[in-house]
Length: 385
Image 1 (cartoon, rainbow, N blue to C red):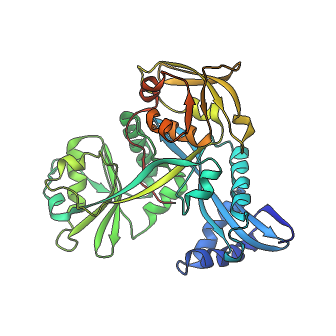
Image 2 (image 1 turned 90 degrees about the vertical axis):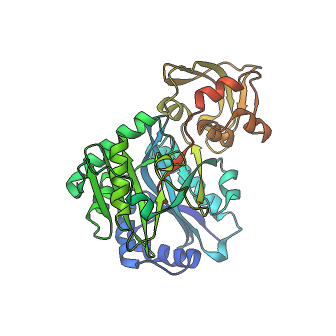
Image 3 (image 1 turned 45 degrees about the horizontal axis):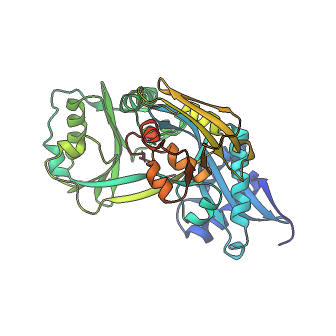
């Protein structure tokens, strides 16, 4: 290694990124389709690489997401496609790349960043921590078919319904005070609705998107604002029971379907864990929603080696469903936390668990109030990126 450095990936380097991707993830996918998608990241400076001299040896992309926290939308840089050439692994290349990603998230103004880890060691070293899960449940299609909802009008959806989908999802997540689900760019939603392999239906207060998957049906997202709409949309999916015996569904563990379906989801439920990191602590804490009755005044000492702007003495004030983090004088009674502990606290991990892992110290007596302020529905994502 002679001149390792982080660079913005240029369009002419995409073939090199593809080659490293193949060596990292194995064969699969369509090269030209992947490059077409990757060009959008190039144009917006959201794909970074590491080069050794003129040779590209690692790369990563950043998705421009928003994420629901406490029923409010917070911008989040979704890190994906992190690849390092096999001959450069174990030499600090991944860390160099991810430090570049963190700085680019700062430049782009994302208060948060999240990812699905292939390994936890690298990402924990850089301040990420587990925040939530992606759940895949399997139901009997025939069971869903009988859920009813025949009085609810359901029609096929198209590209013109993209804004309606966003409105319905937003209302549902605000009402549920959701933690974790993503808001994809509108262009991506339109592309899904154009895809002939995706089936989308919409009702007055809900929608469903699903597809065929290895002889079964797979629900990517189902939003319903009422029991009748939930029954109608799930029954629409289940109407394929003469061909598909099983319906796989990505949904939270507390989704109403678990109470509506007569039979319990099958025992092979799949769970993928994802990680979170705060990029801009004041903005992330101010952007999040909190229970209306939560009142918290706490001095914080944040130690963030990778992002010094987060490091320092702060005072966190939570009231009326909102929060403010302001610089403060040092306090001997401060709650001390690093980036991993801060991410896990943000995601609602109980304070006692964080203390048991050594991720927070100090702030004696604050645990019940911290749990009230940051607690809520279990964080989840529907999407893998």
